[in-house]
Length: 474
Ligand code: DQQ
Image (cartoon, helix red, strand yellow):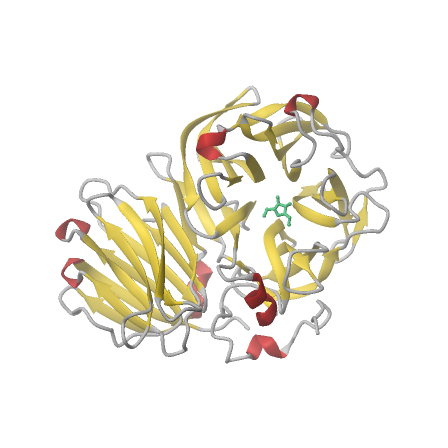
């Protein structure tokens, strides 16, 4: 029987037998979750809204779920915030969007869809002071049509709104038929009347996808950053980023890269209490639909990360510092203290920091979620020759033979730079960040609770390793 958002303290959360369910990443008590929405620091608390199906663990009947946190790590789920209204522009679902502070009035933007998602329009809702009750704007939709030059009618969604010097701006995700994904720029004086300006960015279909979703656009240091999610023809959908200049409302990218080469998607950025820019991301499942329904939950939020740019305008992201408050038992290994083979430190709820001198070995890294016989594991490997970071997952699927899958992202180390790995392992989630700027997030479903070993690859290249057990946030 589906569990609704009203039953928020449910036994599944405490179900120790569910070894795949994360313990320190946010997910609702049950059911389907995808994109983060409307993230905002409001009256001293962090609010996270998210794409949510209260009926079960599949994508349908999408509402905005709601959670709050004081520290960006410990979350409490609240009742659903915004639901579809019958016979309205959002009758088929409340798709993704953002939230702004309109002179003290919390104001949400989202995409309303019809039953088969062929009509996608932009809507506005005003919130109560505690962000629990939402009043939809009587004039919804505030934007109803794709600009005629786009050559298509659907894929027009995910408003991202920010305050400019003399007006409000909105970036909307779409595509131009035959050309590629597009981010469209709109202007408004009052948040309800919007005028289309021009494309903020148009991609190339072959390089960065046929359609864009979930745009973010904000200043960082003395640059502007565009982060978007791209539906690609050559690989699973990915989040991309572009760093560049904004002049006369025109964006000129100077550097672009994949944000995360794994399952992280539909990222949404919002300011923290100190003005820093945070990124939240949905971590997609890697298992089939039947297994998701069986588990009763699907979709996880990445630990929010603080963004910055390095001297080469590469996007650096670090999990929020408050995560360290969950750190418990600690194992430290210095250079020379480790040989290949399972380490004494083990577990499936870990925060790991490892530093390697990557020049010493052709490849180096870590194996996590290692089975006692060593055959099943997730290997985090840096290849010094190809300068690639990889996550290789080797597991026993439904067949008896081992299956394996590899994800990879280019990662060039600067001269003399060590490889610095941060790994967040939590049930079926593996977040990997190398030197803050190369990211692969994976899902890995161990076949047995005993598959919790840890091993160093090329221990001769290891400078130091720290492993902390992390406690549950529930
Ligand atoms: N998810 C939402 C859309 C968005 C997509 C629907 C990205 O608004 O484009 O659940 O994952």
